[in-house]
Length: 231
Image (cartoon, rainbow, N blue to C red; front, top):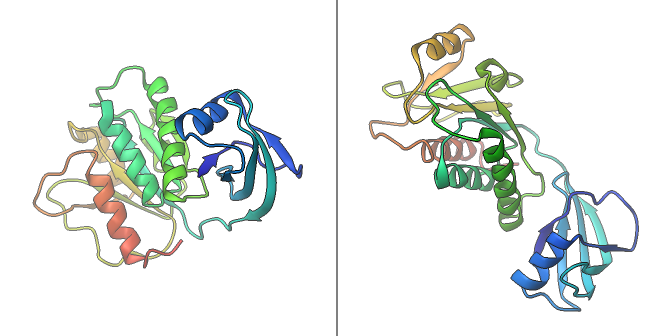
């Protein structure tokens, strides 16, 4: 079993999980005393531990091993116009599985999402769950912004997916890269003008029309494949 715990910086030989993690481990995963658990904090710190007291309110663990995983050599970011419902969950979950290091949730001019901050907090939990399942040791940095400029800052190359554009290149330099996905209603004219002024590269994914939850996965998989699926 693999479990996210926010702070693993200490050097103690034992630790006690909070009530949420304890309930998940003992009730949902039905863990028992003696079971081994892999813990990670989303910053590369890893622990192997065994359960000494399977209490659903405060599970106690004995640490048997500590290791550290090196961080990704390059950043792969996703700037995603916030979409509603389960579609956003699936987009974030699968993006984490594909190795994104940054997820920037944008409120585009045509975004139709209520309670954006609440949604962003929920998607943070979705990302944690995805890391637990896929073996990702580094939790992506997730932020919410209403500024398209802020969403596209800090990356050496930025690709914006847009219909009827030349296909995303098969070979993309292995450097910090961001993929921008617009809202389901498409980019507004002013947003396109802004992106063009920042020398963002527009690219397409063929003649088929992909949903806002599918397009980022296709683009991220293409980039990771071009990079040889390296970290």
